[in-house]
Length: 403
Ligand SMILES: *Cc1c(COP(=O)(O)O)cnc(C)c1O
Image 1 (cartoon, helix red, strand yellow):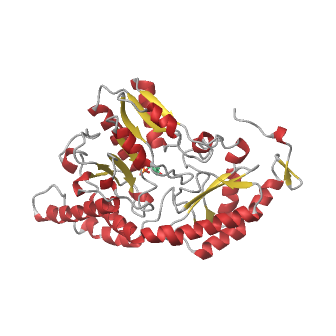
Image 2: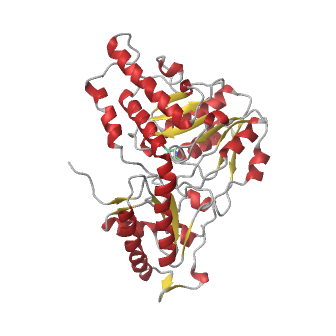
């Protein structure tokens, strides 16, 4: 069976499982199938391999202890677990701090807690470059706050937040600090042992491991309550027979991510920059969204004004190029992404925002093909756009505003 062919620039949505990860996993489906909780040799073998996986993930994060790694079903479970745990261990603290540009796996959890469980939610805004409003953050910190959950890097724009400094400030108020680092892990070198970050979420499928596996870093010594109760797995922090094969795959992917970290920040970054520069030069009326000075090396989010992102994606897809109009969760709706809205990107630009997210598997030949294909597509769509006339945007007055 062969998969779809083409140029895959949607690596922030998911990545291809690395063949070396698949190879590492294969024997653990039917050869070494034991339950790591079993006393006999079938279990012990798998248990040993899981310990190796835990050590590899801890090494990628720069954690002080392997036992700080709790395997989960992915980024969403890790985020839910971290936030809910922090609230349970500090029942007198009834406030939560997060940012306006979080992934729904954080933002929707917080919104639900505010709406249905009476928590006070501080949603810290960002500026036009996607940078966090540090004054608003400082003002929200108090001993009433149980948890801060702020992402390390944004999945739509790649903007990196200064989470280490944010964690230092939270600590002064005795607040637990959690970060959704799903997009940062594997792209940004991490030294968690040297930070005040208490909990960190990562997801396998964003770093060339399978879907449905992830981890939560839980700093040694912090109070913790599991989300799932049952057996004694994961030192009573996450019940349920472990997804051993996927965890072993995640371990291999973590090892490879460390090996390839330099490449992400040199080769991949150079290809991203080449793509971005070429598109900005050849296509008029477009700009990069997010903080270009502090950004993931693999991501560029370009707003092409006066056209619809869905149209761009469709035309790109016809020539075999896979990109995204921001988050998969908002596609299909006419609402522009909540991330770009939070940055106050004008409606006529936010609608035409396209995220190109590369990986270590992206080649220069692929980038050259994208550079060659995009300008014509944008031109064709603009010639059909009601906001566009004779090679130029229509009068300002014609721009619709946010509803
Ligand atoms: C993909 C993603 C998640 C969700 O992870 P899953 O493993 O798919 O549940 C959470 N946060 C960010 C920033 C992501 O990019």
